[in-house]
Length: 396
Image (tube, rainbow, N blue to C red; front, side, top):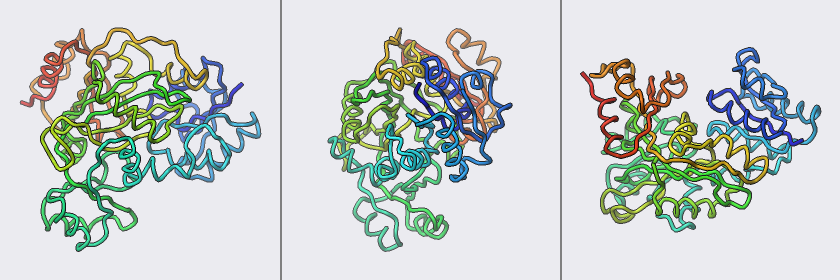
C-alpha cells in the first residue's frame, strides 16, 4: 500500500475531498495539521489512516518529526503534498530531507517560487515576459523606470497571491515604497502590463501529459481587488481557448512538470505594448498547485466532472477515466460585508436559484482576495454570465 502524507488536509475545507479520493483509490492517507483531531470534518477523519497534530505548521522541526513518526510506523513515504501555495517550500524541504522523489525538491524552489526565476522558463516556452528589475535603491529603480516608463508593479519576488503588491505611478510613490518596504523581503519591479488575467489549469500525469485542462478569466486585477477591497469576480471558461491551451502545455514542458495539478497565469494584452500586440498571450507567473479557494469546485461545475477524483487517479494509477460532461461558464462572485447591494442576499439567491451551485461564507484567511460572501453559479452564455456579475455587484 502506498503512503501519502497530506499536509494541512483540513484547510481549505474542500481539500478533504482530495483525501477522500486518495483513500477510495486504496492509498494510506496520513494527515499533518495544526487543527485538533476532533475539529476535523467527519468525512476527513474517515479518509485518514492517522492524523498527527502539530502546534504549528510553521515550525519545521515539529513537521519533520511528524513525517519521521509516520515513516517509523508505516514505512517509506511515496507522496507528500499540500496542494497549497503557502506550504510549497516546506513540502519541498520535507521531500528532500526524507528522499521522497515524487515532487519538487529544494533545488527546484527558485524557478517555481521566485518570480524572477520563472521568467527564464516562460521564455524557453516562447512566452514573452515583462521586463523586470530586482529592487535595490532609488537610483537603480529609477534607471529601470526610465527604460520602461511609469507605472510599474512591485511585489515580493517570492510571494503568495497579490499580498504586498504595489502599483507605483511617480517618484513620490517610489520613495514612499522604498522607505516603508519590509527590509527582510526581496522585491521584484516589473513594467506595467495592460491586459486581462487568464489561466491554464491542468492535472498532468507522470509524462507531463494533461489528464484534465481548463482555465479561468479575472476581469479585474487581483491586486486591485485586494488593495481596494473590491468585490471579487472571475469565472471558469466554458471552453479553453486554443492559444491558452498551447501556451499552458508549452510552459508545463519547459518547467518539466510531472504528476501535478497546476495553475499557470498569463495576461492577454488588451492593447499593443512593448511586450507584444493586442490579443497576445504573455507571461504572468506559475503556481505549482491547484488554483486556490473554491476553484476546484468551480472546475467541477463548469465541466460536469470531479477534479478531486482525476487528481487522485493520477496519483494512484497515473491515468483517469473520469469523463467531462456538459460544459458551462462557472462564475465566482464575492461580496464585501462593508458594501450595501441593490439585490439582497435572499433576493439574489431567489433570482438565480436554478443557476447557483454553492453559496457560502468565505474563511477569514481567504477573504482578502475572495471577499466575505461567495456565490458560485453556472451559465450557458457570456451574456448571462455578465448580467449575473452586474446583478451581484450593483450597489444601492
